[in-house]
Length: 467
Ligand code: SF4
Ligand SMILES: [Zn+2]
Image (tube, rainbow, N blue to C red; front, top):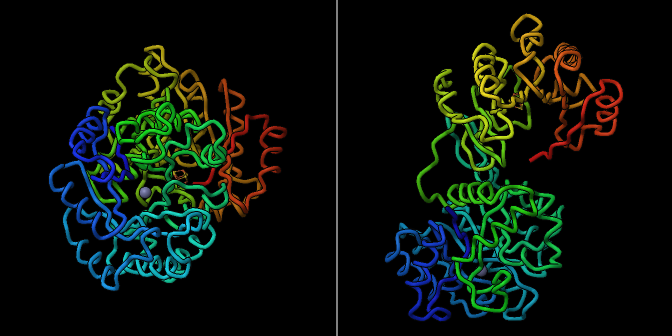
């Protein structure tokens, strides 16, 4: 199921066909459509449409193209319309210096006012920017930079959870722009341009992956190939999802699920997903057997929302052996079954071994993702017990520097770094395959880590992006 986070379903473009367009979208697996307005009149029109169709939601606001025509009380009207139950955000707002529909200072003024309104009312924003990315990011940074709580969002179970605060739609920035907006708590989205052959956005998309992405058609514009040049509609979203999946090296289902989750979270629509024990990514099945960990890494979302690619891993209770096995189904349906959640699997060593034994007895393959502290956690050398049960072990190396290791994982760096190395050596001696991973943090000396992993420890090296 998809969510089209950006489709201008207005009569001016679709006339009396809107009902059919929405029906075709539903037939194509689109469960919700967010319609961003462009001025007061389209805000009201979109609200009427949303009142008639349960899956349609609205963002109200003044588009930069309309900035010059905006009346002095328009902002008050936008604020009033926010109280409608189908209104889920403020948009489409921003800056457009490509077209010359409104003087730049007028656009800037209106944009700033609408961002401030979003902060006051706690609504997410949908941002349009064309030939103006630096100035748009500057304004957002300046305004939300003054209000960290807005950026950080609410607290859940006493923990600060960083809620997304908006989306830069039809994103045209480069990779560093993308990380900058993601860092500010924003998503990015790409319509049909990803299906065009020489689009400059493809490299950026490939680099940032799909964790911070929404799907959008930007209907009636930006039709994907093979509809390029024709009027676009939300039913085409699957073509865009498929192309994005190719670029980010994921399955179409992964992209659909993760972006759907992101849209739900951003706009507060639909039911929250149930936390899962087993979750599939590409052809692997991951098992989330615990949320406990002996470490507390600075880059880990375990105590936050605990989301992985649209799956919620915030389980309230640890699953039993039977529940885990039931969640697997047939291990031969997957390339591998991986112990990997927001917790350290070796904390539940006995359960883990029983599950692995069950998978192996059915001919499946098992991987263990671990922090490498299993021997300290279990107060004995556990590696011999993994022989015959684990085909691949993937250990978080993090850094070659024990002090930095301690800072990053918020543990006794010297003791645990040493223990991780000893664990790795044992795995290398007894298990078929050992991979060591590094999170791409700016402060970590990646080249030194790579050398130590490959040359000193003789293991495979894998770099994981930070977000
Ligand atoms: S070791 Fe893994 S699960 Fe534990 S805090 Fe670090 S990243 Fe999170
Ligand atoms: Zn738009």
